[in-house]
Length: 255
Length: 206
Image (cartoon, rainbow over all chains, first blue to last red; front, side, top):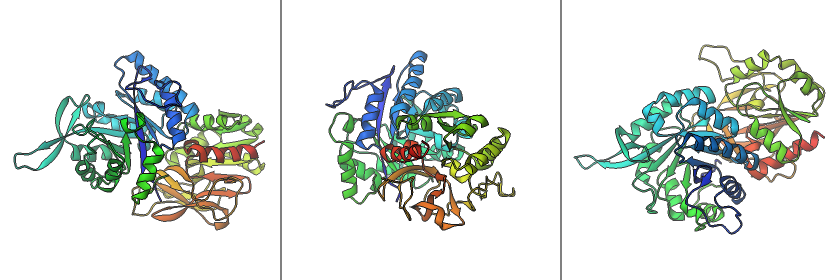
């Protein structure tokens, strides 16, 4: 049976993990490669590197991170953050990344999804969507696509953008709830479920995980195929093994 | 030295690095002479079936692959590299095109997953072993490995099935027939279990 996936996400700036981590057996908690190898050993199913570097020079550093990761880490890993053209995708994939996630650049120029999927295959292209919960005048809920780290509203409906992204060739969707992000109150499972029921590609819940129950809720209530989390693992609050045991107890198939 | 065939279908670096990690000497190549001298051959690949066959033909690699297999040296197909070993695939270029033909080394066909769970299958799924094989020596029944695919192989002879996996249907996820081995999943992305499988293959290449 296909397992539900647990995916730690590492924010990287200029080739270093930001926010830091607390693990006794990690020599250099700022080294993304060492941290990635640690998560592979721990049983993480995939990894995401999210590049928050501003400069072009820093972006080239990410290619080097991908190359070094591929030498030591033998689970799939995705690189995202600021990728806006096919050449950058190729450089990262050739360096050993398995998937590229696109976000704001795909909103600005949706053909980026088609170009990536046609060149490298849909399985390489992850569409990441930053979602903000809104209320219509009649009181009903909708979600607006926001870009540039959640600062810029676009007026676009997340459900429609998700469907369009899949039609254009995205092989997976990451739904990052801007409202839930950082709250540790749980994923926006109404959002996750609404999208998961409309598309036939895997949906990855992101933003808001603070407890193991939240991971289970993302899968059971949000119908997500995978859950992405950062702080609950980075700060040693829970191990991947504890998270898997918890999900297994709740009847969720895990590796 | 193990030759990893480069025919322009996806990233081969991770296969090379995983083999290096288990202590094997491996090199990415499209040179038929290197295939000839290699102690083992890996045919990886991600992408479309017909395009892959076209690329193999254009690179003049079809006959060298047949010779390598006929010579008896260990051969490992990975993902699309498994599917290419079969006779035909339902992965047509367009609806009215003829079924593309593969290498035809393993009798049988490649089929699309029937309606049911999401296609492509992306993620970790389990292996069950209908028989003992060299490729899966030391790998526990029920081990998880990483899959990304929309089509699966249906061998004509069930005796070649080395592993089965359940995804809506139970299907053949690995074959082993003499020196010809192939896996539908990605051992190079399947953590410790995948490295064990590659290590088993590398040991046969010595």
